[in-house]
Image: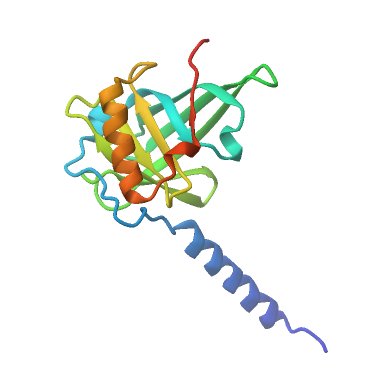
Length: 180
């Protein structure tokens, strides 16, 4: 059976449509609500990771920070950095974030790999923008962040209670050391 050029072109268009649909697929865990109203200018700057649900891109990392800066086009530059304590080397990853709705709702999509985006949802933040809880697309991704290398126990308790109520297994959290 001979394949026609139009069949190849059609298959290519279908594959491209599939990639675009997956790349723009970002969600928020069931029951979670993004912070609203959200003040993006107050969120910009450096954050220290206090804990996370571990995943392959952060495996064996301590001293993890995220730095958010506003770009001219309104998107946000995301600079993540961490120290791999097994390999004894720093790892850095730069990406971009865009708001899913408008910039007063803390639902963003973040990409470190071209057109592929994942959900980044700020689901809790204190009034001073010093402590935040961030959820990914699903219950596999969760971060507690602070403007300092520590977070008060009362805030941790409050955020973990909220995470448990959403279905997160908080026993799986990896607590990030900050010693470098």
